[in-house]
Image (cartoon, rainbow, N blue to C red; front, top):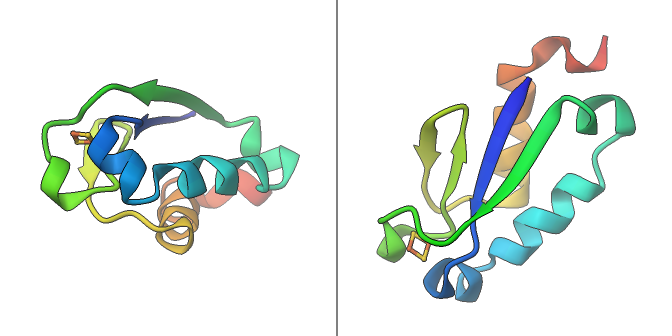
Length: 80
Ligand code: FES
């Protein structure tokens, strides 16, 4: 299981956290069903957003592309 916490605080929102959110919706259902998504108010790194915490680790300056990479790395078996 992949636990994804997306910061939806003002700073991260302005830096594109919504794009991150919509990129998850575009993932194939087989991958999507392994991901639990939660919105967070602030991950205390507002100047480095958008911030996403994945299985407890915070990733800064997240992009949809980088998110897919990390998900593939963590859940390599996700497509199997
Ligand atoms: S608003 Fe996202 S880390 Fe603070």
